[in-house]
Amino acid sequence: MKKIISFLLILGITFSLSALHLANAPVKIALLKYGGGGDWYANPTALTNLIRFCNKELNTAIDQSYSTVEVGSADLFNFPFVHMTGHGNIVFTDLEAQNLRLYLQSGGFLHIDDNYGMDPFVRPSMKKVFPELDFVELPFTHQIYHQKFDFPNGLPKIHKHNEKAPQGFGIIWQGRLVCFYSYECDLGDGWEDREVHKDPEEVRITALRMGSNIIRYIFGQ
Image (cartoon, rainbow, N blue to C red; front, side, top):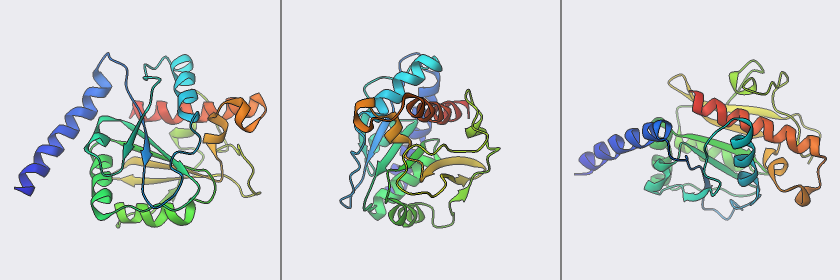
């Protein structure tokens, strides 16, 4: 019985994710809610501003009201793009890890944005999702850095918690980038309302441009 349910679920996922790319209705993206006590809800204005920027600059039709979805929920498969952020602990149960793996294998995409302090928790959590794979640093020549906006030196440094260089890591499953992890960059801070971090406008625009590159790359795959 479990095998039958899993088979039907896979069929539904594949159809759902394909339909999102073909439908005329606005596409919806989501923020990932996870357990463990970390602040998954950090940067509450970030996705709204990124959506507005993409709709203006890329002519996308993304619903401006993003959703919140739990890692283990079947609703995860309704979204072609899911964003994950925070500062602290992350815990995936076995079932949640399996659900996220199936989502990513079925065409979904996860962007993890380190809001500082996530790295010790992100890596073991994603290792639970893909035990056979590791994060690999993407070269500056990767297409994600060269969409509408060109980033010849890779990720920009948006918020300086320390002097470490920003790095973009990926999980590649069967030749497809299924997860992009922006580390020591803090794109989400740059996406937030200008009153939140009081960053110069050019810093905010740089962050939004890199974010729009991620969105365009995903929908262009």
